[in-house]
Amino acid sequence: MLKLYFIRHGKTEWNLEGRFQGAGGDSPLLTESYDQMVQVGRFLKDTPFTHAYASPIKRARVTAQHVVKELHQQVPLTLVSRLEEFHLGKMEGMAFTAVRDQFPAELDAFRNHPDRYDAAKIGGETFTQVIDRMTPAIQKIVAANPKPTDNVLIVSHGAALNAEINALLGTPLADLRKRGGLRNTSVTVLETVDGHHYDLVDWNDTSFLTAAATPTDTI
Image (cartoon, rainbow, N blue to C red; front, side, top):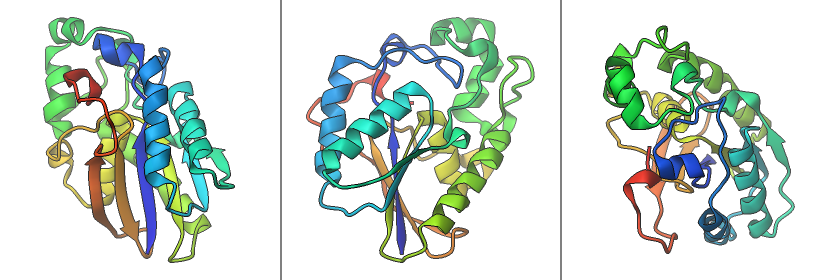
């Protein structure tokens, strides 16, 4: 079966500060994140990869570049715009506390009730819109790597990956958040034979990271 290794980008300044980044925001990666990218690459180096794909947003692109470097394999990297983070409109750059005060219903739905999330007030994307743009990209990636022994890397963003991975697994919209969040530089693995049906192999694996987890690591 083809295996897809999904990696969330390294931790950024806004992650640490508790701010929404979204597709339009992009704060610098923390120094510690580069060490964690090395750890991801070393963790995966014994797995042969045929290709790597990443969101073009800098925090994901740089994470992908560093992880691929640590694999010590000749792995081509392709940037795919459909893999970018949620467009969060007015929430981008805002502290979580400020969003809670200004957009309480939207924040609660975004974090806990995806089926109730109405992005109109903030001018962003809904969960369905994100899934509808990401799924064709994943299907194209699967089609481009047809051998059952192929493995691919996909580097993207916490909220978008959480929504898309769960959608690929057939999780109902209302339950997309029930597996919990994804930590920075975590690895989640799915396998598929046809690009339409997926099985979960590993969720949010961070066993290879030496730093202890903190609340700001996960979204």
